[in-house]
Image (cartoon, rainbow, N blue to C red; front, side):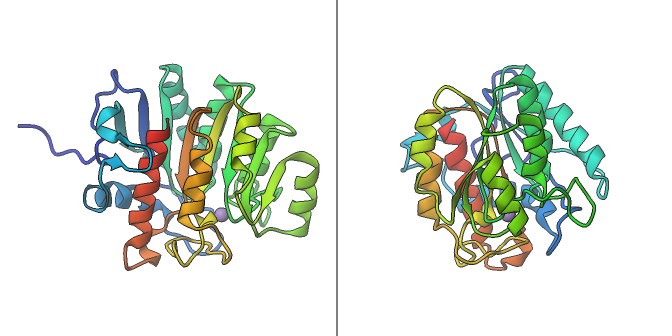
Length: 281
Ligand SMILES: [Mn+2]
């Protein structure tokens, strides 16, 4: 007999043999509009058994061919963003120091900063690929510097100029966009230039952060800050797969908020997206 431990489908390797480690960061305390992303990690694991196959016809690869360890969810102190980020960073550093790749399930988008900090410590030349509806470049949100609306601004403070590449952005303040033109690279509204950027960055270690609200709310309504005019899932997949042959050191998938989509389609979409990202590694 074996203990009943729920993992993401097909991800049942042991830690020492694993090439990739999944963990969840169920935190949504700085969400400015509709909270609930803390429930995404459990929903994705639970639904993955029913919603998707382990085999991807897009990549002709199977999760069963990979060695992936699912570490479960971190215990994060709700309401304490600084401490939560420290816990995420410490955990992520341990995995990266063991020579493994990292796959984090959010959580709101702020959790990315903990994992980005860990990846940056290991790869000082790290570059960040960012899919999102929102620029996330505010210096602070209502005075809070640790906010899901500031996560890429915090990341820039680590990496500096010309190291962040954004796709699908269609919402933000005038100040964010004006600041962004000076310091980062942005493709507004679409992600058609992903292959071009992937080729430019072929020698760089990458952190890929996916805020699922980059998708159009008609396909992905289960999120805290829905923003009309987004990518189709097919467009997103094509853009993600453009980075398949790059050196992705770590990635995350954030901002599923399962309870806003009672049909469950958004959670099923998130499961399928996570499968494709795991198989890209
Ligand atoms: Mn967003």
